[in-house]
Length: 360
Image (cartoon, rainbow, N blue to C red; front, side, top):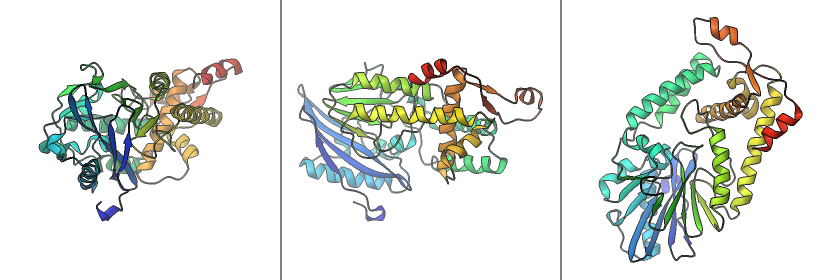
């Protein structure tokens, strides 16, 4: 592997149906390691050489992809080059999972697929980035982020996303019947609008929907439709039933998951705990920015924005369910300038609150 970032070694797994899977580690961004996966199998007379996700394309990510692919091919003992890939499947439209496409697309004729709701992220990326940045700018005002910090957060958001250029997509998952040969997909909106998990025999590729050791990041649906905590929690339950019999779950980050049911329950409880903490905090009116600081403390860099979105997703969930009100409604109505929103907890019966949180 490239020695610049001390990349971990490629790992090999096998499915009950005889497929070989190679986990390729990539440094997506400084401090953030992720994985692409190469799956090799024969199925009903057809050869499948499938790459799942591509890394970010940022920094040394493309070199890690090249080095990892070469190592996987050597481990497999097969003379495979990029142009021998049959498919590239993208789990979801976040840059650390599809950014390497700008590098790969000229090197392979593989058929590229993504879910419909993330299609424009890949094919009209520049437009998508402009629209999201505009929505984020307004959101930072509503959340109560101070002016200079808003500028800094927008710059940080855009910095890691400038290298990718739009590419052609060959098919979308729903149009393909949520299946490519033996690869089955389930749409799991929440973390990302078009997120899918992919099942191959008894192995699940979970992207960022279910991760070991960390609760996948959430942002409010106010920023992007089909995201938000409500969609995410419902998608978690769909995976719980759909993925019965899965022996191994391979995420886009962190270590493999050996007990998917248990991990889903752990993540669900993280969100329940976070919602309860926010309800307690909002006995005093707070902005989302203040809630974020109370929940996550003194974070730095890009993590500041992630914490703000995470807090906002939980506030949105509670507000949608009638547990919160806007404290400064008259100020919002009468102020000629954009104004931060302050939320407060509404009086709620224990039974009502228990019913709502029992769904989390």
